[in-house]
Length: 211
Image: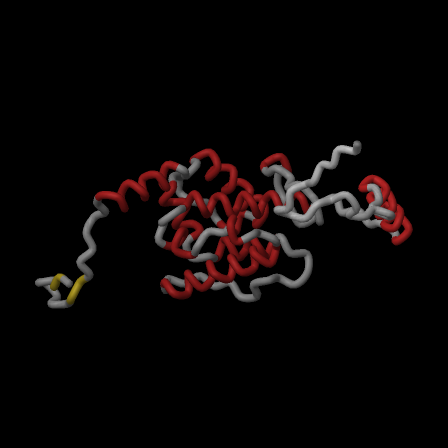
């Protein structure tokens, strides 16, 4: 800990990133897509309305726009045709309140259908650790909304790819029994088979010459 001489209070001794950690962060930052930022911003405003405002251009401005969780909560609520998943959305300058609202969005997004592998972590957004992961989550959310086609999506549907839908087929009991019969015929039968003429493991086979 380092002491601030002007105030006499202790300060965290947090220096710049060096070595491997800096290299890793640099690679993460390169995954952030500026064009994707613009598309996602356009969708969120179309989806939620002008009341959510607009971010300043650039990665830091985009992070600050989403950081308190309010815009994200408005977004997930706008995709619900029934009861809103997040009842109370409140702007706050307190860190724990902001992170709490981000967590509420993530929980609601998972219930909406986003898998954990496509989900960013709260610190990815709040601390700016991986804003590319935030973009990935929002892209997945947009794709799910377009695929559902339940009337809640607003904006250009071509902004997102439709996710593949499972083609689940139902078979009757007669069809299943018929399938089992076909498999049985293809595999043949061992009816009437015996071990006559076979030798046990490790025993030599005797060959007899008839006179």
